[in-house]
Image (cartoon, rainbow, N blue to C red; front, side):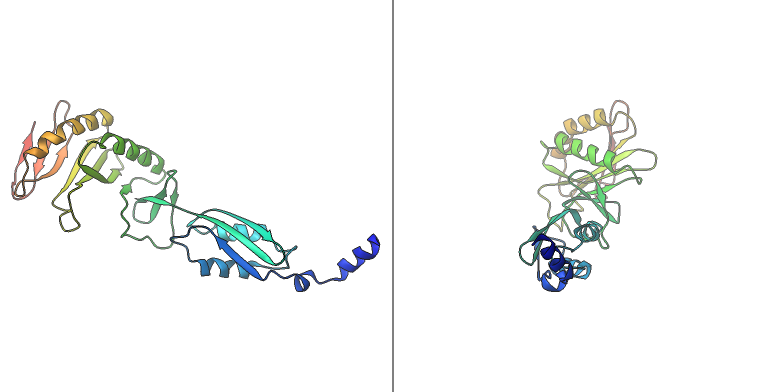
Length: 236
């Protein structure tokens, strides 16, 4: 009986007898299109329920920039479940990519510039350092009535960042923006000094005289640049 059964199965055309008839994409997708995913999968399906190459499909999907993790499972009698974890962008990286919640860079074909994400910039290969320092910035500035909108590490390894008042709107973002320069050395010490003095500095400003930039690179002090209406610099 076993021999007869084996010969019978050998003669069957399994892809024809047991084709994959249904593909289900499972996961919370905000940037990927389910129809596009299904099209890629169906184009990769060769064989039937038992013979379909799951590794080939998994590799094709894993190459998509927005896919963080993917797994597949056969579902009897003719279905294929595809579980996808999408990348979660938490910051922009330079002009052509994003950073996810673990500090890794991914680069899709297009970057949506309208997302409410901080802009991180730096030399290639330094994204982990910039992301770690951004987390330090968030912790240090949590008590301020400002939000960190951008952080840059330049080619000389000098740091600077941008904060915007929480009370600002899209129309007033430019007027409520402050550029802060920390430089290359003693950056955490300078940042702590900045967090300490900012509340006192902002008390003095008004609609006509707003802070434009603060330079913390002085050994024992800092310089404040006011906007064009004030048209003056103040060193402390």
